[in-house]
Image (cartoon, rainbow, N blue to C red; front, side, top):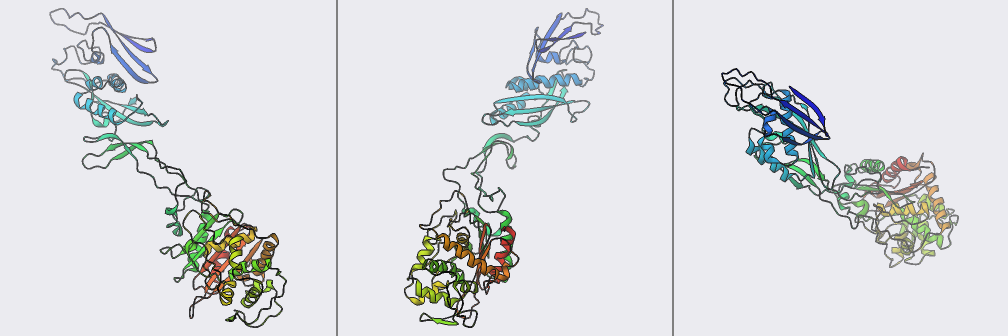
Length: 577
């Protein structure tokens, strides 16, 4: 009979002696009156298994000749000629508990002794312990495993390893088979997969360093940007924040055997790279990419930049072809009549008002002859009319009359921030506005020709400065070191410029592309000469609400066509009235 009693947090078994059916001529051998075995359990994880009264651990599992757990008849172990009975479910469970308890407490010799291949088991368990630096290891039986057979039942168990430095535990399921040895003992059938389902001969566990991650900047909302063609050359130039470090992580891996590659099983400490959020907006970036793609069809180089006037944040940028250099940030071209925004600011500060009559002659001289796109003389045009109709001769005449050589460069520098060596977060090119050496050179600069060199980024900032009234250096990342302009656009000058740009958007040369846009809008077209016999370059700068844009299409013709269409497309998507 076997009586089971609860005792001191464990389970106490009393095995009393009983007649086992021996009917030989001699008296049955006398055996100890009783034995007690303690199976201590904590949280379902068996940690200690102790045999008492002179019996080895295997005795309580049916290995003795008393038949208490063998179920195989009365003959002594190893001497019976009858077939051995397979282990019962109870015997398999008991064998599994004893094995897992020994393994869990780090007694690999004891655990290995409970298997049918002690040396192989001890080596594998020791190797697992050396390769996996766990702070604690819990092994919990979870019931019969379907991998078993009638002759060799199997027990499923859960492995849980905890490590210093991380709150995450490595958990996985495995199973072990149980067999009856020829001598009657109940043993764990050893297999490398018992330690881990993926462990095979020749493979071993180790902790390896993870590859250092590559930082992939995101947009302002944390969305990925690496799918945008125009950003392929920009994102790799984004440096991590000052003082930040890449953290090299570690993982438990199963190293290769027979040419197999190491397989990552559990991340101990993840690799990390400092995350950089750019000022870009992925939605607006998509629209900008498409607008540039459409206007660059046929191989025309083009670019477009969108800036937030209230902050200077660069919200989108695109250029074509993407295989070339980044012309949006690094290009240098004459801006054509979009430069008249700065020329107008200089004239307004010199005492000219938007209503001052500035005749638009068909031809004027500096002494070089200058003409307009629009034929004819318009003696009653005001400065505002000249701006809206993009009259070259009016700006040249009034500029030569009111401005000193070099005034244009000073206003551009002090109030619009051009030529201040911007550091936007990636390499970019500053404006070139040289001091003219004579009146011909000055006349060319007043209408955005000559030696002036700018790009879409710089001119988007010009539009943004007019909209907000204050120069805010554009940036691609918030932690970029900004420069400030030494001066500020006078409030009345800023207001006059907004009025003139609004008139251009609704009644002037920018009317067609800006049609249908509501709210606070303003624009200026530019048509820059590219050389004798070559198509003119198309320029357009504009704003709508808190969004300012500049676009250029090389060989695109008039500013209100190619560049204007692209810029207005972005304003419709991102601007608000």
